[in-house]
Length: 216
Ligand SMILES: C[S@@+](CC[C@H](N)C(=O)[O-])C[C@H]1O[C@@H](n2cnc3c(N)ncnc32)[C@H](O)[C@@H]1O
Image 1 (spheres, rainbow, N blue to C red):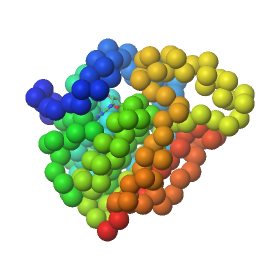
Image 2: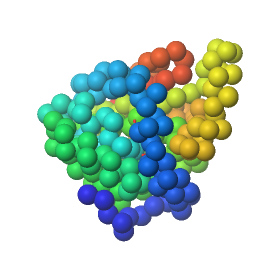
Image 3: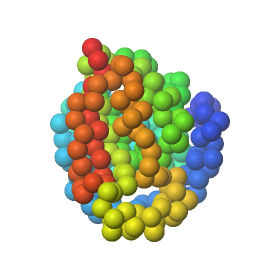
Image 4: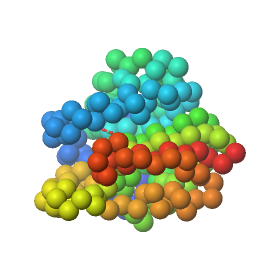
C-alpha cells in the first residue's frame, strides 16, 4: 500500500511532482502507444516467476500479464500512479503488493530477496546521474543469479524515424520526463555485479530490451 513517509532522492522531487499531474491523464495520453505495448507485455512477462520486483510499476499496465506463480512487489515514486495500479492489481492472477518507493533509494525493499527485477519505461524517465543509484539498488535486492529485464526507448539510427522522434521529444520529456538518449545500457554494463546476457530490439531500433542476471 502507498506510504507517504518514504525516502525520495531530492533530485527526484520534480519528476514526482510531474507524475502527480501526468497520472490523471496517463492512460489516455499513453493509449496510442499502449496499443502496441500490450502486444509485447505477455512476451516480456510470460516466463517471469518467483519473487518479482517491478520498479516504476506506473498505472499497472504489466500486472495482468504475470502468471499465478509470481509474487510481486511493485514500487513507484508517484502515489497517483499507484492508485491506478492498485485497481489493476485487484484483477491480476498473482499475489501483489504495491508501495510508494523511489527506485534509487528503496529503503523498504529487502536485500537479496528477488528472483526477478522488471522495469518497463522506467530508466528512460530516470535522469542519467541517478541511474547508477538505481543500478546499485537492483544489485542489492536481487538474489545471486536473479534476473532482470528492462524495456527502454532510444533514438533510432534511421534518419526519418529519428526526425519523428525529434518532433515529439519535447512533449515526451515535458509530460513523462522521458528521453531517448538515456545511457541505461552503459550504466548497467558498468556494474561488476550485473551481467548483461542479451539485448535486442522489440520494434525497429527504438524499443530496446536489456536482459541479464546478478552474478552469483
Ligand atoms: C513511463 S511510466 C511507465 C509505467 C509502467 N512501467 C509502464 O510500462 O506502463 C514511468 C513510471 O516510473 C515512475 N518513476 C519514475 N522515477 C521513479 C523512481 N525513481 N522510482 C520509482 N518510480 C519511478 C513514474 O512515477 C511512472 O509511474
